[in-house]
Length: 442
Image (cartoon, rainbow, N blue to C red):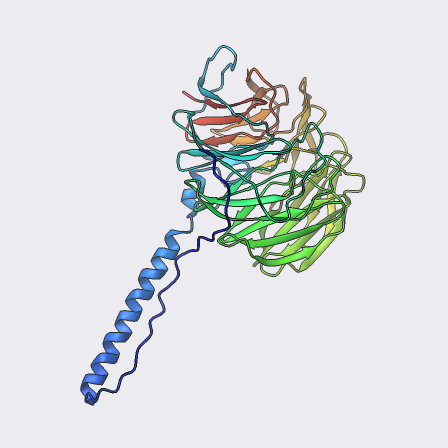
């Protein structure tokens, strides 16, 4: 059943705040002392209960690893999934446990939490969040996102972006969805509305497409537009701004990357022409480096072993030393634009918009191998079950053996075009195609 979103607030549980009512009794000192002891013990108990309840609201790292909470999963495109298929065909049905037609179009990728998949669909007038049962493929519920104050009547989008390109995010308690018109909405896992707001009318050549990220109890927003650029951290429970930092870089379609650098958590953003890092707690700018000039479409930054990797469609792939803030190496050949590179065990795997895919030594930048697919890569490569899965835009999955030499283990076809990054959980791969959501598994 369709449901209009409303502006109620669902709050977390916090420790109880005990208060005493003073009366005019004349108890003796012993009774008064006993009363104080009882009060202190009671308050301590209530505080422990409240704290335990609060902690239960925050997903553990183990829970995150069992799910797929955002575009790149719980561990930067690396999944602990096992038993994955290497052969399927979406047209014949081989290896397909189910496929579900999604009523409204969208290029957002599916996210997964506790047996349910969440994704968005939209056109110029309607914006919807879908919940899909992972066992049956049935649509459990769908919710319209509408009647949000400040929401613009119309926005410009390109055909290849559409109105539902940003991928959702979840913290395990709530789910968050955004759309091309700047609408942002939060629901609980059962579809009850929590809060909503409009981020400002986007002015964007292709259409707003930056995906959402949660970190702790922060919802991180990268909103680079030609007219209203900023990065912000919102309270997941209320949508209220914790901090907001203005950015003047024009449009971007990237996503925030949170990295622990030294003893500090940083939020790293890429947009033409600059990579900028911000303090996670305050939003204060920490450092920047110009290395993405003419890079209109920038990929999500990748971090590991003291290096930040950034790239764009028309700018070099660069490795930046976070201590010296200098470029260690760069490559102008096979570099991600829409997709995001995969870093694993000292190797950097990349798929480009033009169909090339390559592997680099992550420290030195040496190109170890390269090849070409028949179509480009918008989906990001995923490492799972000891293999690399790279989905090109035709819907062909290229399955590779990780390593310093190219070894193609197999290819499988979806039967329709695909630009979304797969969610990989348990023994299954969930792929959004142009019209359907597929579950591929044994």
